[in-house]
Amino acid sequence: MYEGKLVRLRRVDPVKDLDDRYRWMNDPAVANTLGMRPGRLSREEIRSYLESAAASSEAFVEWAIEDLHRGTHIGGCTIRSFNHVARSAELAILIGEAEYRGKGYGTDAVRLLLHIGFDQFNLNRIWLTVNAHNAAGLRAYEKAGLVREGRLRQYGFINGSYYDAVIMAILRADYERMRQKEL
View 1 (cartoon, rainbow, N blue to C red):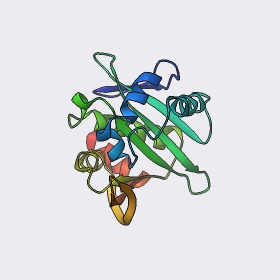
View 2: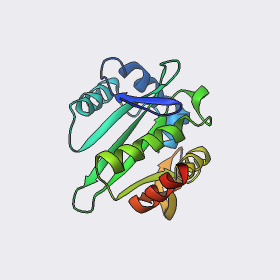
View 3: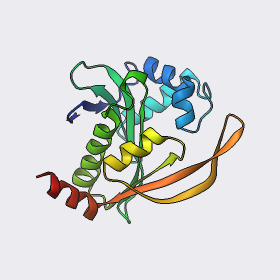
View 4: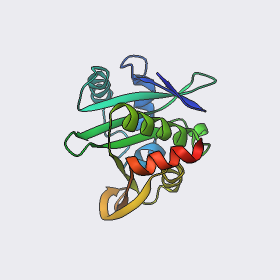
């Protein structure tokens, strides 16, 4: 378990977290930011994913995000796509509960993931892709220290139109400089 200022990350629980995750993946606001069609994943597919994540695989690590003060399950996050030679991995996050969006919970969770990635997994680079129209996501990632590296044109297709994705990343050296400023 990891605690930040607003959130706690705990290992995902396939039974406890299934109903929330299924509801979120059927919420158009969540699905659209992830580049998915709402309802694309069945309850069984989500259960299978959560069971794989809970099995502590080297391929990816998944956490549930909880409000630190109320204990409410508000989202999920992962570090995946590990490249052990280059010491890089991809970060992904979703804040499923609408009342927690835009209030710093996502930024706090991303900061915890960066801490885990750099300090525990000894990564050199952590990256992600985000829908270019996801202003809240872009803000949260930039607040956490990630920088825009490029744009993938017409990366995905949602609701009858293509969307661009922005590639963002943070390097270990950037992360260490940022931590020094916080001290």
